[in-house]
Amino acid sequence: MWYQQTLTLGPKSRGFHLVTDEVLGQIRGLSGVKVGLLHLLLQHTSASLTLNENCDPTVRYDMEQYFLNAVPDNASYEHDYEGPDDMPSHIKS
Image (cartoon, rainbow, N blue to C red; front, side):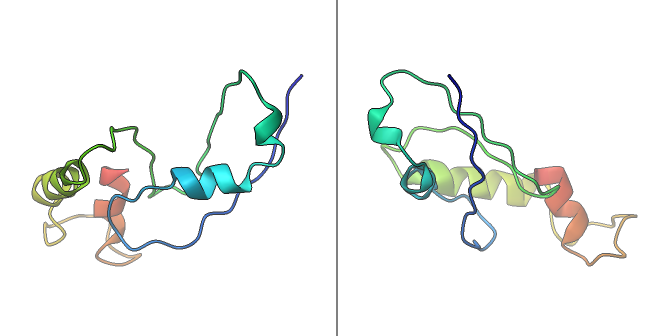
């Protein structure tokens, strides 16, 4: 048996966000599932999902700092006609 559902997450500012509760809160019939596998597909080219531990919130901070340093917003990107933040978002995703 399989089940498919489209979920919509609320808008988020740039950064790393916990979405577990938001995702689980939208899945109908989840309480009846004993064993399962969840596949998530983001339908956006400049967003991504990552799995990390959640015991220490500084993990999200360190991830954000790494990406800000590795992919600076003010670098000279060729692809800029959709706005200055577009290419950095593609690289980070």
